[in-house]
Length: 164
Image (tube, rainbow, N blue to C red; front, side):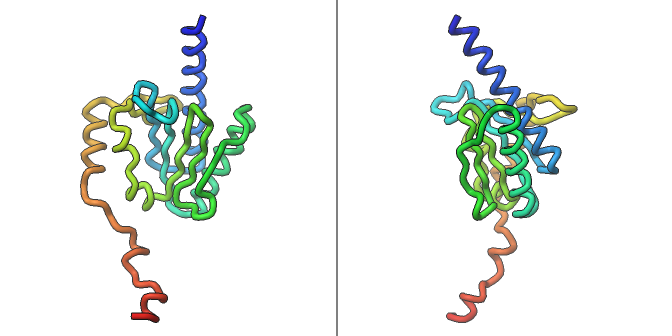
């Protein structure tokens, strides 16, 4: 009986990860990935849903939409962090953790590399499609290239100009 219960829980978690990725896509988040962490030792969740946004306003909009969708789907309100800075908002639904990144923050943190042993999925035609080993390796190789420093960090702040 426990085996069928865990299978149904796993299926619900995967369905919710797909649901969250659809919401993110509807709000125009980019580079959406779903990581299946169920076979990863020490993983904090069954699935990570990761997406990038091009502005802080979009980070807020996508995060709010996922939170609202989760509540409407009966998942309640998640534990969350990052709302003030709007660079990396985390919505923790226990089995599914949604990471809504500003593109600069995602490029900096590259959390996909930390969980490279997971299966990677992309959203294709309203379903999750597993990345091939070659596509995953290419993706991870691109992440290994030198990090791009966000433009806003290249400019001296007025504080530095006043005191230098």
